[in-house]
Image 1 (cartoon, rainbow over the protein chains, first blue to last red):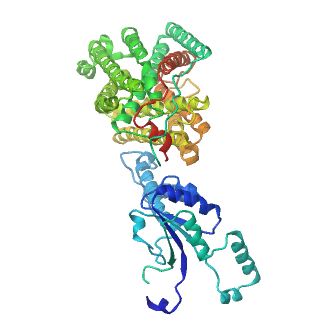
Image 2: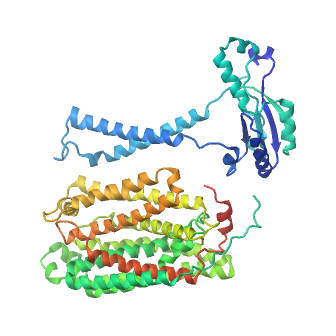
Length: 209
Length: 405
């Protein structure tokens, strides 16, 4: 528990559990229509089409892959061109110095290597992983339960607001005004109304707390 | 997610209007007439045109059967609504038989130097190869191959069509046994066919990758043709609510993947020969990179076209996800890929006869249009006699309603 023990536990959000994917999809449609700032679904296996129903946008990951791949390709040209044509011209079998067909396998290898590593790295980065500030709130979501969590927005305390300048306050208020205000009890009853079998509040707890 | 209540609308057989049949008939008559006139006017150009156009459409007919077989061999779900279109290509097989017989009995002396005893005499290598490269064996083994293709077409496509009537799972189970058998027969017989009809044009030269090179062309062009059929039928409304964007996406992914496969095979064949630099192997690429003066377009330009047109253009055109889900983009790329395959076959055949550069004129185009007319006639006739969708395939409901990429 450490030093967070004497603080009041912070609310991470409200979660509702469903027995079937169909019930989860129906609830997701309803919750999305309410315009909360943030909510997420947790399922034991991928449910096709759920990302669209949640309104998730497509990931920019392919652009990272593309950029990395082209970078790898250029690196392979420079590496081989510089080492075997410019810095230490190497005659192999009487062929021209810039015998590019011989270099093509390396063009391919470095393209794939850069693209592959950066795709994995970019995936972690875009997903914000590893995230030690969150932990699983119920192990059953990896087994047989379908959950929908409405996140509590990150509200500023009165002290923090006092320290902000006018521009920051205006921005903060504009952010809050864009979405439906979060209220723990109301969110719980909405989830119950959407057909959740079991509704709970979740405390914000990290891996090491 | 409940299965069971959903039924797939049966689009029925294709209704071919008389103008379509008319266009294909005119194409076939004019094209083949032009080809015959071309053979009279210029035997070398006429026969080479017949040869590579024959191989182009033979690849499509066999490729359709190959696509059908891999769907059964892998129990594929996604392809159930489009498989019948690939099956329709195999209706062209009778023309394969006839045009092969024409080549064998009239074209061989013009096309294959190994068939000329005067040429073989005194050439140690050709004398040694005569055990394989002689007319009788050439005729017999190719006829056996075509016979096997007919047999598997009758079985695989026959079972698929029969299932439309009784909906019996037994047809699927039979095809699951036949499909892997066909795939083995196909790999061996098509490699042989490619060696006999294309590689033996230069009987001194050999490449152990030639069969798979020809296969790469077969598969890319067949996938492109299947995509074109799908989009045409989707546009005229027959496949509405049956083929969705996810099916198109899968066709696009296949075309994209095997564009890369072709580049990989083509480059592997080239690099090994280029690196080893053995005279009897490099002359194949010498004929295609160094042209005698005389034509505006040299073979080197055609070689460069293949790198750009057969690999880079389809690769970058199909790279974005949205491109593979767009009807119009897929249609353009598919037509382009068929064009590139045609140029590829010209690049394989013609340098053995015309050292200066490609000859693409009315004789070559007439051959293409003539066979295209026959291909159109036979495939639309097949589709007008059978449902255009394998409507009682065990996977069809899942594929139409639950196929998400």
